[in-house]
Amino acid sequence: MKIGIEAQRIFRDKKHGMDMVVLEEIRQLQLIDKENQYYIFVKPGNDRCISETDNFHIVEVRCPSYPLWEQVALPLAIRKYKPDFLHCTSNTAPLFCPVPLLLTLHDIIYLEKRTNANRSVYQNLGWMYRKLVVPRIIHKCSRIITVSRFEQQNIMRRFPQLATDTVCMIYNGYNTRFCTKDETGNQPNDSQVYQKYIGTDGYLFFFGNTDPKKNTENTLLAYALYLQQSKVKRKLLVGDFSEHHLETLLKRHHIEHIRPFIVLAGYIPNADMPHIYRNAFAVLYTSLRESFGIPLIEAMACGTPVVTGQTSSLPEIAGEEAAMCDVSSSEAIASLILRLETQADYYHFQQGWGIKRSKLFSWELTARHLYDVYRSVAAKV
Image 1 (tube, one colour):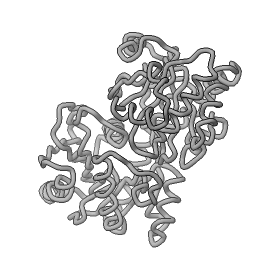
Image 2 (spheres, helix red, strand yellow):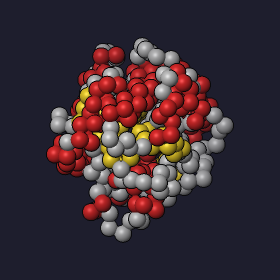
Image 3 (spheres, one colour):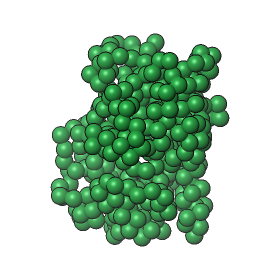
């Protein structure tokens, strides 16, 4: 096979969820497949996180913007290198692709009714682009890959004309760097890392985000309630969130008094995340809508309890015994944090459950399933 993989953003310094998924998939494919030829189409960047091998070739494609890169520059590169098919990995693809197309459709939230306004111009533009492109390409795809049963069913309901075998599900995984303190081996001392962001361990950790689905407002309200009732009053470490957005939300809900307890970490590189998870008392993964939720599994693998929701894919991934609640209720979130803090048996059970549950997922398994999909598509080309 001669396989093309779109991985436009994996060389950028600040990677996010979909970038990390394709990066881990490529790394595992390099380990398990030494025969077929791969062409990885990327935009130039500073973080050259993968290297070429005898059968993996990096093709740098230059273009100033995401849409132009995908709709113009990428198809031109495909015509030059002529792969048997192209796997686009981040929800969108060229409207006119000269070879058969595979698409990883992580979610279709941008096609769903919006209940809250998103104030981020960048995220709104991305939303509009996906909403324009996806309905126009989905019926052209030889295979659509998604990351949970929940999202697979969601896609089939939205596009009932799709053949049942067109949409397949492959779970994401987690890197083995995410592990408990007992499994760390020769990794750097955790304190060297987490003390860059916060001075003590035993904190609560939350990924802040302006996207309404991340439920940041309710989570901050829950934290305010927690502080009222807790004897410990753990600090809240918030990743990837700006001072301006935080102050806006605190003023809107008249909870400015909690500001001294909140530490803003900014963007946290993926290499630091195992240390952040391991030394947190608990992780607040309180999203309203997720197609998979890699941070959920990463934190669980590190032996840290996760407070999460009962909606979308989260029960499917976290499992029935996870620490779940109605995350639309700030009172429910606060109550679950307090239960972890005051009931030692429940806390230790959640630690064990998370470690056990995380073992069901791995990037190697993801890549092997993906390789099987490649073979089935190639057989029909």
